[in-house]
Image (tube, rainbow, N blue to C red; front, side):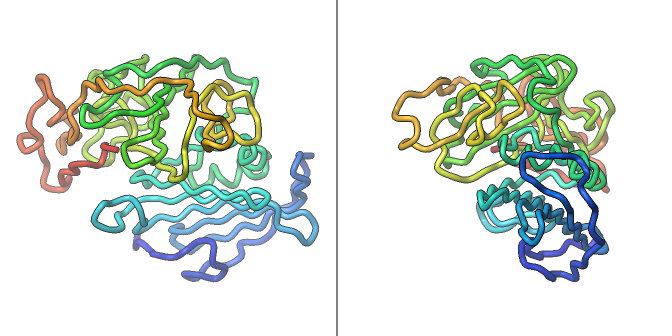
Length: 308
């Protein structure tokens, strides 16, 4: 697949064309009655827009290519999801390029994504939409050291877990970027659950792994003036409105008190990776091998891919 560098929000960019309109028959709080779906021929760019009469109410855009903000030295290959509902816009970026999840979406955004006709369109490009509020039982708590890297403090770190699905950790990193990483296996993850495919069990090699050396996905990143992370009550100003999740706001909204503590005792070395020969974690401390000893000619090393 040739990687494009188009900007999804610009109509007509990179050969984007209308794939047609889809009527929305499901009643919804946004009043959307029609979808317009646009996609490049190689699926490097995908847009689904919700309309009510002559007004565009909501828009989801996925872009694969060189993404600004992923690399310290410049754009890196990855993915960008932009969601705009009622003029409130969010941008989330990741190095992941195959499977995309909206567990970190706001309640406002999920009001759009969970419309069945929208969810169906998103699944066609591997965007997974979580169940509606009340359909899952969630547990949340303070992050543990073995969930985190040892090279920086994870500010206001919270983990979120529920039966029958992989949970996630949410925190603010040293660069004031909101970080969401999906966990594989029981709370705490660990190398026993590391370097696995998206089903959490199958073997994989290098960047083809969905879960990295410590049992977490490559980070999803959202920039902004993040101030407080707290259990989500399903309000429209939340990031993670799928139950017991998190709230992200500004100092003027919530004062100075924080809900979750900073965690500075991360246990996992940065720079861990997944063996190119499918042999599991490497450069991950403990008894894991050096990545140079488990490479494969067609799977290059990817240092920093799993870091935040």
